[in-house]
Length: 259
Ligand SMILES: NC(=O)c1ccc[n+]([C@@H]2O[C@H](COP(=O)([O-])OP(=O)(O)OC[C@H]3O[C@@H](n4cnc5c(N)ncnc54)[C@H](OP(=O)(O)O)[C@@H]3O)[C@@H](O)[C@H]2O)c1
Image 1 (tube, helix red, strand yellow):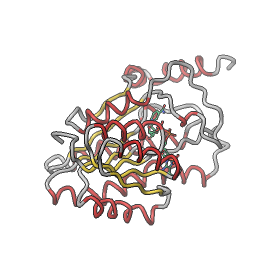
Image 2 (tube, rainbow, N blue to C red):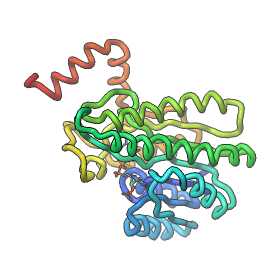
Image 3 (spheres, rainbow, N blue to C red):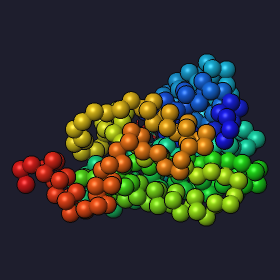
Image 4 (spheres, rainbow, N blue to C red):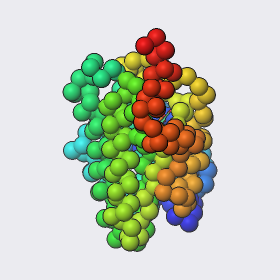
């Protein structure tokens, strides 16, 4: 996209964290916004603060795990704005559990929310974007989509899947008038670390503010490179790719010094 002003942008996970920061940033830039989340109060509060910038905002309180209805949500947003220029697939759920404590139903829910739902939104909107001659899909993955994370098998699996889908879709759509972008956040200071029904998070280190990633997403919409690490933690991925065994030993030594 050449500019944010007047672009119709659908942002999932807009009721908190990175999605909230992004919605406010895009509203300040003059975008028209479709915001999705489950927490109606928080969603309405974000929408109100976006509307203070004088832009058109619509909200959909919606559980993205409901795959039967996700395509319809995308179509409703399209109709509401007379087209969608940008889809930011940002919503996701963690499910921190030891691999042997994670139920099949939990793993399936994580895959539905973090992988199948963003893919369904994208595959519903992309043909319409191609027909309208422009469009951009930004998928927010995770460093956990490049590295396996301790106690996050389902989350990592869902993010590896989203990363792979995004890489492959960008190739399939190379000659089409649409842009595909991938954001790979590092550790960001949001509620994802304290969501209920998860084991305690074990990350030790500095957490970056959500606006860091919001800036990266805005840059991606405006024609940045295919993948952006935000903050740049790509050195961990390079280390893993160079020597997986050393990476795994180092991870266990850091996280499980007693082993
Ligand atoms: N924070 C980090 O350290 C970090 C690191 C790497 C990647 N990421 C990625 O960044 C993205 C944003 O995460 P965040 O840190 O901002 O997390 P967050 O603060 O927990 O926010 C998650 C958002 O997703 C929404 N959401 C979750 N499940 C949903 C569902 N079933 N249906 C509809 N909405 C749902 C939440 O809405 P409700 O609360 O209204 O349900 C909320 O708006 C995610 O894709 C995450 O994987 C984050």
